Length: 191
Image 1 (cartoon, rainbow, N blue to C red):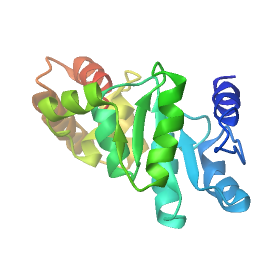
Image 2: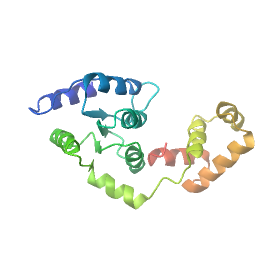
Image 3: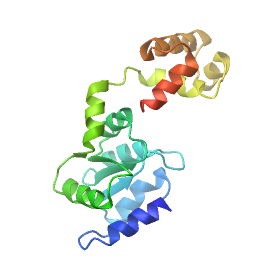
Image 4: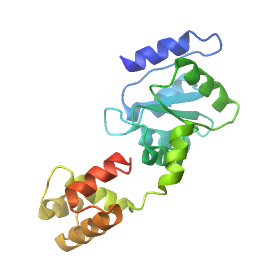
């Protein structure tokens, strides 16, 4: 419903044509290629195997001429940083005025970067994500309350290695335990 509403709003702009819509992250590259899209408008959370951040990276790798705009409800500094690392050209929160989205599309087509200024300031003050990719994997696996042995089996690690990654992640997030480390990492957009 939100995707269709955004497409309808953009379709009202005289100089913007919506050429494709997909729901799943893994469908983005093919649809953009087939439709000859100049801009891919993505959400961070998308159904299917690929998130919007994964889809952004895939678009950037396979269709480098296509600009990527992330529009999301998750206005967190960590998500902004991850989106920029994935190759996004713009990052806006969904509660921004509709005209701002259309203007962001125009600006990225001119080669500009567009970032929500409040979020940019928060990202700069927060600093970089301190977690390594493997620490993030282990925290994600721990999010459902899984035991170290279960996490180890799922990620093909030893229990001791899982314990070490969790301990390091807890220290880096200044958490008291793994559940709090997961919560902090989620709130900051690191997971």
